Length: 421
Image 1: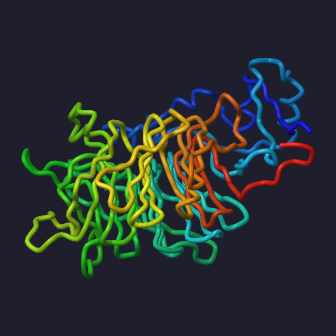
Image 2 (image 1 turned 90 degrees about the vertical axis):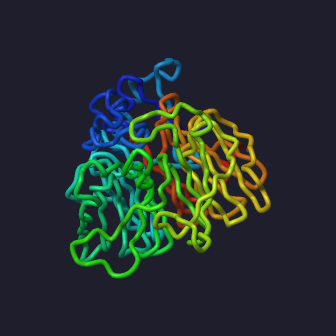
Image 3 (image 1 turned 180 degrees about the vertical axis):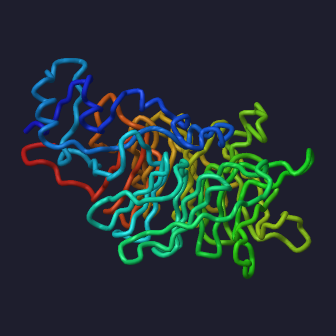
């Protein structure tokens, strides 16, 4: 039996499938975002683009009738029953892109993206959530259903206490600094609880010889009303592109140090820097951080963008040009792992050492089964696959991926169709 396929002509495939007014939306990048002039450096990698509007049956039927399967301009959309990952309506406007996804449970999942896009999944449907800011949000994270954060830059850090009587309210944190010069983009967020989390950011120099650091953490103790509860720490240079930790006393960060305060360093070895934070010894100056950071050789000369681990002794990192790295107990540097793709890889998540997912550009989805990475199939237009930027799941059979004009859901391996694969 042949797989059931829906075919759309190239002239209208994206318009009908994803609700795009123009193919130019695919090239929007950060220039389409409200924060485009506020985010320096390579940050177009973190914002812009478009998102999904699921077509109804009449649209698909009309396009199918106008498209000859033998036409090279005919875009093929696999049927959901024939692929691992299925398209789900995200409930947000067209011409948007989702950059990050996180949830506290199977029925409480959040995703954020360009132009102030915030959407929530309640276990049945995705719905747009109003927020009084149209900046591009690069990361979403929370310590639970009543403590959710969305970050864009150090002037646009939003916190919500979740749904109350069916509605959501957001509070903007006060500016980190009264001087706009010291306000910079934020890139990623990760933590262990409401009082122990980190936000990656671009550093800013206090003077020619000192940097204000590229991470924000919660201030210790009680913070006066009206004051920002966050502070810069670490004194480290470079843009933080990923954060993960097995515990508050064992944290990893990925750093792209090619550019600091608008100046490119030019050294490829500074692109894929990894650092491990452990409790600082007494007397060591960590510039306000409780952790002291040590560089660990990643054996990578490209930007690393996603990091996750199944434990302190099994940590993974992924990045540009299909780069995959692994760090295990007793390793002195990261292992080089064979990759089946050359696409830029942007996010990684898993449930354990034998169940890991990686997503990236051109609709790339890879799965690690404990032995090797293999490509996974998705309900995406063949030849026009969008880039994927975020992944999170509540279990091995409930995983979400977000990206350009796309929300995908995985509900576990599917049984082969009767009569053949």
